[in-house]
Image (cartoon, rainbow, N blue to C red):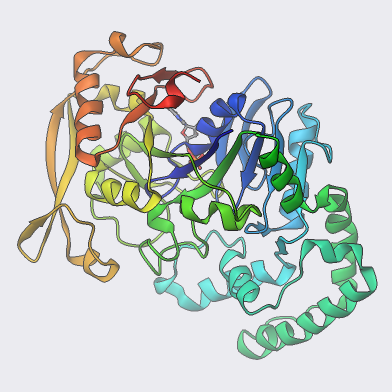
Length: 433
Ligand code: GDP
């Protein structure tokens, strides 16, 4: 039996989806344990290309059970639309391969409105939200002002509970933001159109996971975003509103007794950051445009151009620590093939001092990147599948990163397709599985 988390080490968009899709072959269950429809995991396989927002990335593998745990922001509308997209490409979704926790809280229709209204109010001080309602949802969850998915099985209590919350929420919508109040008619419609559709998949996933654990099944936990977006450990307030760290997996999945045997941290071979907030190693101008184009760095959910920069080893080392990563998957190495010299940010300069420690969020505005250049390889590596076949300069780049962050790099990804991967024997057990 093995419990493994796949987590982002940086700002998100590291390529977690492609790693989960690859590794699910060895797992029986894949669980999403936090976050909602605010990010996208891109998966390319025999069914086509998908940007999964809520569905676990194991959904394409026959025999894999996919679970949406209690820690996710369960948006019935987005989830049902996503399920329809996936089903329309021939992927079967049944209560046997998709299970939604009855303890997951529902993202309610006004959460998206509130997200949008607050970003508008903030104007140039906005957080860069994807406006999927995630921050209002989690605030309400912790205020106990939302609904558990399992309440859909108790329709009378559900209507009365939701009417109470709606009355309270309408005060905020109308009196603070001057917006329209919600009515029970619109809520009934939302329940019929979306909640009823996902209801057959809702069950006691805690018991399911406990039994899977007792039977020695292998469980893969799939995180969203990355260390630097973690509510407690990230670049607050430019974080997301949940814990993106591996340590949250047992809580958010519904299996609090889970002991994590492996944490695979996903690192992109260069840096990207979508939205607002400090991004010390950000590049601008032509060099940035070239890298953005080479890596096709546009948001999976919003299409927004991502901010780009060289690999930030200071942030990455911190991200590895926060995730307690046991090994690393380095993705998109192929994207750097066009560069003659490859920049890497090795240190920050803060108040005239060189440091390799990631500073407190408020100190980031004053931090300057210290950049070194490594030799590029300047040839296509996307067809290579063996470590020994990589150009010397590419191997040197990977080894430099590995040494700087202090964690073995066991996977090197050289393309978005499932098989564009190089396994590297670093002595970790994943190598032989
Ligand atoms: P996630 O949210 O961490 O799953 O990452 P995203 O899906 O937002 O971004 C990763 C993007 O890079 C997707 O478009 C992937 O198809 C693509 N990708 C992943 N690994 C590689 C790789 O090694 N090389 C290239 N060229 N693209 C990759």
